[in-house]
Each structure stands twice: as C-alpha cells, then as structure tokens.
Image (cartoon, rainbow, N blue to C red; front, side, top):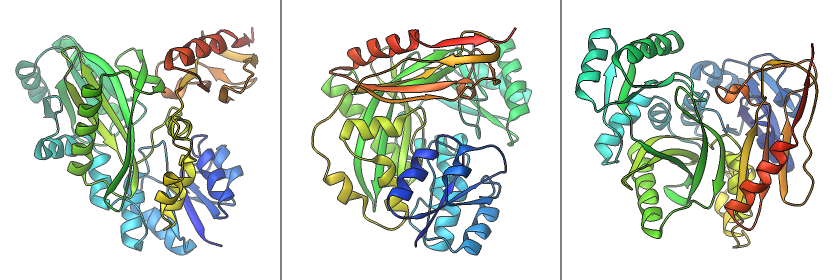
Length: 396
C-alpha cells in the first residue's frame, strides 16, 4: 500500500487524512506529540518537528513514503518543499516553499515579477523603524515575516504604536527582522488556486469576512466573489503574476489580496498550500469536487486533472464562518443547532471543561460552520441564524 505523509495533526488536517484513506493510501501523520485529532485518524504517527526540513526528510526516508502533503498550515511548507525535492516526489520546490513562507523574500519576488503589492521596508532596528515611518504613507502595517494565523501583524497609526508593534513582533518571530508596509485601505478578498505541471487548473476568487482588531483577521469566506467582470479579471491576473513570480507548481495555493477603495487590486501574500478557515470546503462545494482528494492524489503522483475535469459543471454559492465565544471562561455545556441539507459542515471544537476566550485570532475559534445557498447573501443569513443558536453555559 502506498504511503502518504501528511504534515500536521490538527483538526484542519483531518479531512485530508480521511480523503487519503478513502483513496486507499496508508496515512502517516507527522507532528509533535500531543492530543491532536489527526493522530487518532491516521494509520500511523511520526513524531517530528514539521518546521525542520532536515528532520522531516530523515523521517520520510526511514518510512519510505510515496508522497507528502499538507493543507491549511504555513508551518510545514518549507519542510514539504525540501523533502519533495530531495526525494523526487510531487510537490512545490524548496525555493518556492521558501519564498511563499517568508514575507520579505516574497515581497522582493513580487517586485521582480511585476506584481502590484503595497510598498514595504525591511526593518531590523529602531533606526530603520523610524526611517520606514518617515518614508511610507500612513498608517502602516508591521508584520513578522514567518508567522501564521495573523499573528505578529499590527496596524499602526503613530510612531509610538509602530515601536510597540515592533517589540511585539520581534518577541514572536524567529527572524532578526520584520517588514513595515503601506497600509492599503479597502476590502480584504482572497483566492484559491491549484497548479499542476505548470498549468493553473483554476483560480477561484472569494470574499473574506474579517475580524478587525490589531489587524484584519479572517473569520470566514464565501464564493462567488462580489465583483464586476473587469475586477474579477484583474484579481485573476494579479494571482497568476504572483504564482509565476514565486514559482509555485504542483501545489494548492492560498492567496490574500486587498481591493482598495479606489478599485485597485493589491497582492498581499500567497502560500503553496490550501487555505484554512474552511477554504478547501469552499472549493469543494463551489466546483462540486473533492478538493482534499485532489491534493492527496497529486502528492501521490496521480493526475488531479482527471478528478477536476469530471466535475459536474455547476457552481454552488457557499459561505463559512468561525463560531466564537461571547466571553472568556470555562465551558460547562455547549450546543449549536443547525439542521438541513444546506448545512455542509458544523464542527464544535470546544467541549465541557475547555477554557475559551473572546476572539483575537484564529486560535480562539471554538468551532466552524459551512452552508450552501442560492446566493452569498442567502448563505450569510443562514450563518447568522446558526450563530444565534450557539449556546454556552460557563462554570461559576
């Protein structure tokens, strides 16, 4: 039986593990020890730091794997690219993985590739921080270059705020620098794409629903994108330029953009893996195809175009949203009512005894829901209805 190594064992990897098992592959989850649901779902577990390319490669060789994959996580992308290239497996290259996993290198590649992206400066000292403030339009956004789930990202309206953000980001990052970039006022949008043997099979733009805090953080997505045909073309054009600039190939792609108030489209970042926050479900529902299966098949050397080209041809509007706790506390009981064929997914992660927090970033989600409908607006109305049924009783 062919072996597929899946990097990561959190709940976001579980659908990929299940899809791989349905396809008849022996699944090996790689990650650190802990109470992670993927460990129980997979056929086998391999305990390794998935941020360490050399450690992952050594484990993959010992296990004699036939393919390697991940989804919804930035953390293992470098190790995936390195291992795939060293072992001759299907996947993005080590260089593309590096560029798509480090924001400064990515921004520099955008410049070389003609991608429209906000102005930026590399910052590794207070002096460079002040220079960035003096030379960039205000406000600015400061970013750690190697984190995920919107961690280490701060919108700053003053030099004092920027200095505080710099200290916060540098305390989180493993790098000796961060970036400060022009803050483009507008609406967050995104896209999912898939590249195989140099061919972009699809680019699917989508709406982003964001939580506004220290920076905009995604809490849900919906498709189709609300845009004019001309704007849709420009979104796809910038996505293609960015994919080529980074050199992404043989991978799913998660893309973040901004639709500025003046109508311009700016590329923020992209990564060589499927997006989180139910974005694989968004692709699956919209196209009527098992997207997780496509990812697994490609990793195992099978042609994902066969599955994608057999899709029904209809496009189904859908939307997803995090479920969030109304206040901090220890859960005594939790429930959420959602019945009907339009409910594609309802997951409650929080359980009695868990400590939950008011939402600040992705780690604070307590569940998620995905629905389909006649339109994006109808999907939002249904999400509101389901969200209103969420009931949490807290311990005294």
